[in-house]
Length: 146
Image 1 (cartoon, rainbow, N blue to C red):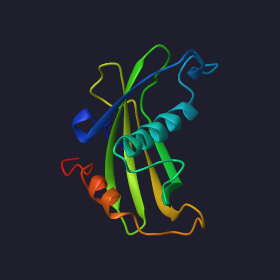
Image 2: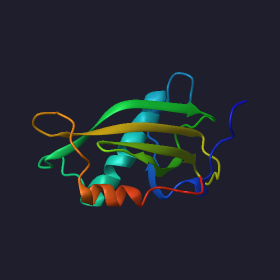
Image 3: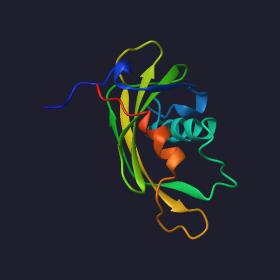
Image 4: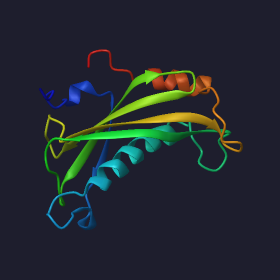
């Protein structure tokens, strides 16, 4: 049995995105690659705006090592998509983000996805621990009521 779509109440942080003309595919709905662009943009925008990532100078960076998405309802241009963000788990060097995409004013997610960042040294690309400041901020994205 497929679990029901998540709601906005299941997420902690929100970021709005506008769909673009080129986001629609031949079938008239948002192409699946756009979902992943929105996931990635939401997470990295949150990291950057919280002073946790400088794409040019951060000594540690998160590399995506696993992703997934459940497509629950079609989305298309023109729509405003609100991405809900939460953290499901934090390990020594990894974090699992979960993102829900909510079209327009919908309370139900049209898509729910995840990706896992493994933190690595920016130069050597070898795994390293999540920086303390980042770990504390990530803990604030955990929703214990999901």
